[in-house]
Amino acid sequence: MTQVFRRDRVGTVSLAVVGFFVLLAVTAPLITALYGKNPTEHYGQNETGLLSPEGLPVLPNGGISAEHWFGIEPGLGRDVFAQLLHGIRTSLLIAFASAAVIAVVGVVAGVTAGYLSGLADRAFTFVCNVLLAFPALLFLLTLGPVVQTRFVGPDESEPAWMQFTVLILVFSAFGWVPLAMVLRTVVRSLREREFVEAARALGASRRHLVFRELLPNVWAPVLVHITLAVPAIVTTEAALSFLGVGINEPIPDWGRMISRGSEVFYDDPTYMVFPGVSLLVFVLAFNLLGDAVRDALDPHTVR
Image 1 (tube, rainbow, N blue to C red):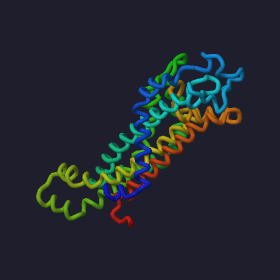
Image 2: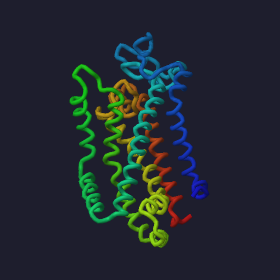
Image 3: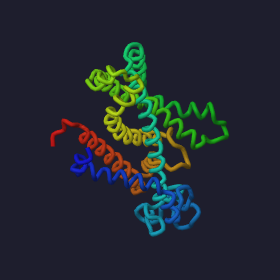
Image 4: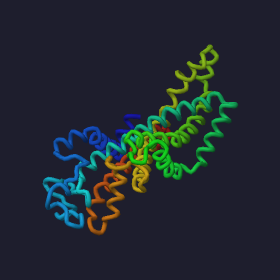
């Protein structure tokens, strides 16, 4: 698998790009500390000569200068480079945490349903059909205001941990279904294979069959699913923030930056370029990486 992946130049480049984004997310506090800016301070309002009376950057190209490498945000005057770096952390934290929960729930549910069959399989199928028929996006759009009304006082702002938790739980609640259905089919096929029958004939317990015979053979579809699920979660989270129901101020977020950029696009088109291009490059690289991993794990791939 490793040799096949190394021969895939697109996959190798995609892995390097994804690794670069992950490195930026991990080191964002250090980079911004060395840069001397933070993502929440209103530099344009606190310093004269950066914003016009209309709230637009005075300098050309969105206020790009030696002090503000990517310019400043129209209106509030926050540093775009610092916001962009910390926005990566927001997106990747939600995406990777959701993917981890999806992997755990999907493996447990899919392997259990595939191995036991019978009543467990019928209950699994019913739950999956209900969740697949449920309008997940509508649920995401309505859950945020409901949670804020129920658990947050009228004069309080929703804490950051609650915003992250709600998104991760909702993404996980709907995201595990496709993975579990794939694993159910894989396990139903594996349990009839000779090596499983041989282990069963030797008196192996169910625990041994599941953990020693079945699970080692389902990691490939799990890995492929996760590499394709992460970019989908990133784009969905950005879309929710764009619509105003994702991550709220003052937490930096790519979707909200793009939303703000759409409001001032005709006066300051530069502001939308950086989060838009960053989101496009990351999602494209991760999707290409997912395709490369799938090809490397597929024994029938023709090279």
